[in-house]
Image 1 (spheres, rainbow over the protein chains, first blue to last red):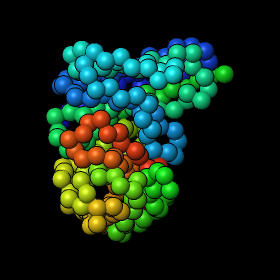
Image 2: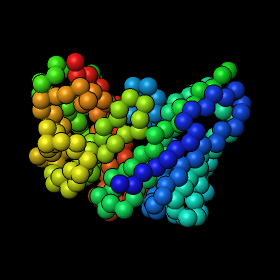
Image 3: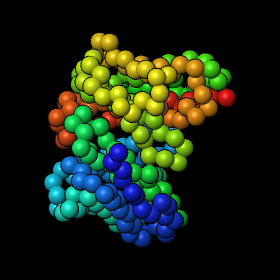
Length: 112
Length: 117
């Protein structure tokens, strides 16, 4: 089936630094979404991308839908301690049921 | 409540026992999804309902897993004869629109953590 490869697997950064993570696939995705999950909670949607080449921002977060429709990146600028969590990329692939396929996640730790 | 509600939050079952996990989606949401999340992994799709119709159950790992949404609102995921490999967090998500609407975001519950001993 379709899979998403997310990197890096984990990051440990200093508060104030910028962060970049990405997601790739061998097949085309129709949408790309980025979620954040904190311990004991479900994933929460951060940014949704619906068109190839689309660049969207949400506060300090910026994400882009790759022009080939096979990749996406998420940038976080000026990180703060509350950015800590696991970030997942997800996408709608070839299925018409609307199900999302998730990457393996990037664990972000921020040192104050 | 305003969000997706799942119960119980934690469930410990002895191997071989049957369990039932409940999901209350956001009122009026057409689509309902179940996902399984193993420790350190991303959520993996199990099954999808549009109203009361189960349109995709391709992710259910075995015939021990069964899901229903008889009135198009509350859903139950049942696992029969639980095995240790069933230990995971089971997440429910709902969205306002049906399957053709990619721009209808999924709202996740906080999950049920199932531990099979």
